Image (cartoon, rainbow, N blue to C red):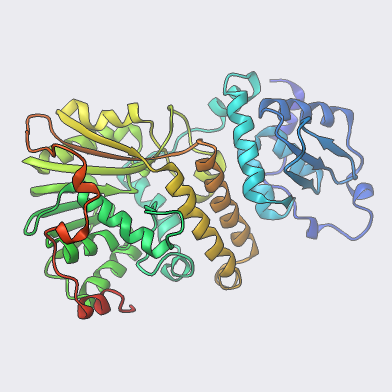
Length: 449
C-alpha cells in the first residue's frame, strides 16, 4: 500500500465538528488545501462520476465537479472531513454530514439523487471504487444472534420516535398509492388490501407472517379478511406494542404475536406473507427461508414476499448499512429465486412498486421534519441529521432506480389453484368476502396504547 494511503487509513475515526474548533480564521486553523489533496479529491470525484455539485472547502476554494449546473453546494469545513471523504465517500460522507463537518446547501434529495445517478453512470469497475467496495464494505452476518442485535439497533430505539412520523397504524413499509394525491394513511390501507387480495385470503384460513413490525398487517388481515394469523418478530418493543393493540382491538383470540426468529416458525398455514423482512435476512439464508415456507405451506397454499431490492446484485449503501440498518442486504430478483427454486415454489406474479416507495418516503420525510424538535429532544441534533440523511437518501435511491421494491407472489409448483386473471387485485371491496367493517371495530382499531 502506498504511503499516502497508509496515512489516510490511519486518520482519526471521524471528522471533527466545526463547532469544536477555536474561534478564528478557519483557513489559518486548518491550513490551505494542498496540491496532493486536490489530486486525491479529483480521483475521488472521478470515481463517483463527477456529480453536478460544487464543493466549497474550508479555505474558500471552490470546485465545480461537473460541467453541468450544480444542483447543490457542499461545504467541507475541515481537513479531517475531506480526507475521510476521499478515503471512502459512501461511508464517510454520512458521518461528516451527521457530525457537521459537511453541510449541503440546496435540495438534499436532489443533491443525493444527482450523486446516485453519477455513481451509476461511473459503474463499479473503476479501480478506486472497486477497491473501496471490495475492501471496506463487507456484508454483516444475519445469523440469529446477530439478527437480534441488528433489529434492536434500529426498531427498538423507541416506539414513541416512530409514532412521531409514521401513519396512525405504525406501518413502516412501502405504501400503495391508488393515486398520487392519496394521503399516507389511505395509501397504507390500500397497500394492506393489495397484499391481502394478492394472497386471495378467505375467511377462516390460517396465515403465517414473518417479520410483522408493529402488527398492523396481521391485525388488518384478521379484522377485514376473517383469517387467523400467527406473526413472528424478534423486536421486543414491536411485539409488545402489537400484543397491546390486539387486546385493545379485541383480536387477541385471532392474532398471535410470537417473539421469535422466522427460522423457528412451526405449524401449517394456507398463506405465508413477509413484508419488509427479506432485506434483513441475507442471501446466505435464503434457502433456509425457502425450507421454512416449504415446511409450513399447505398443498394449495400461496405466499407473498415484499422486499426492497436491486436491479442487479450489489451492496447496500455503506453508511446506511453501518449506521442505520445493520445487516441490510436488498436482493436482486435473481437472488430472490434462491428462496423458491430449490424447494419447488412457483412464482406467479412480480410487481415493482419503486416509485410508490419514493412517494412513501417523501411523506415520512415531511413528517419527520415537522417533528424535528421532538426527535432532537428524544435524542440529539446528530441523530436528527443522520435520520434526515437516511430518509432523503432513500428517496433519492428509489427515484434514481438504485433501489427497487418487489412484491413476489408464489405457490407450490404442483398446485393448480391459481387465479385465471389479475381481476381480483382491482375489483371493488364490495365483492370481497371479508369481515364486516363496523364503527365500533374502527374505533377499537385506532385506540391508543
